[in-house]
Amino acid sequence: MMNCLSCFMASLAFFHISEFLLAWVYMRQDWSRKSLLLSRPYSAAMACAVAEYLLEGRLLPGLKRKGQGVACLGLAVVVCGEAVRKTAMVTAKGNFTHALQFQRREGHVLVTHGIYRYMRHPGYAGWLLWVVGTQALLVNPFCLLAFPIVAWRFFRTRVEVEEQQLRSFFGPAYLAYAQRVPSGLPFIP
Ligand SMILES: C[S@@+](CC[C@H](N)C(=O)[O-])C[C@H]1O[C@@H](n2cnc3c(N)ncnc32)[C@H](O)[C@@H]1O
Image 1 (cartoon, rainbow, N blue to C red):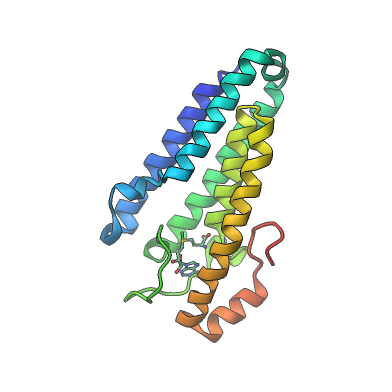
Image 2 (cartoon, protein in one colour):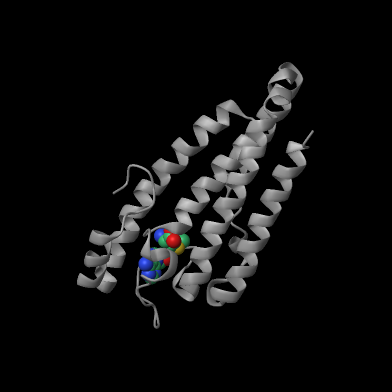
């Protein structure tokens, strides 16, 4: 039987350490403790996920035992989500910054090749997949439902602000790109 909690912890560790290392490689000028991406709301959400896992493990042990197939699928989704997000980061290089940019930095170019040819927001789409995968991995019905809803609402606003900036940085080139390439996020054209 798979030890879901250990796999979840390993997934979390891999995600945050790899973000930190890639930030050092591609976002050196902004590199700091924040590059670990451990914000308070996010940490609280992950603490809730662990609490749900432990509570249900105690009260409904059958749910976790019978959900081994879901857990395996969750692990596969975690790996896919990581692959999509990291491909985006490596493709966009220094153009991918953890924090939104409100002023065009020197050398910031519009990336439309590689994975960006198929979706405008592979970094966010990958993270969304990853977070859904983590909750399937824990066989957490409540967080599996709640996390994607909260994350989607967060990305809807973020994408709006980000694209407004990208239009102001790159003008018609971004408009044309946004017209021919989908966002990659569900229900966001
Ligand atoms: C956290 S990254 C996310 C990038 C993208 N939304 C994604 O999901 O892959 C955010 C920064 O990337 C930059 N960015 C987003 N799309 C870009 C593109 N196609 N080309 C260049 N820079 C981009 C924005 O200026 C923003 O500050």
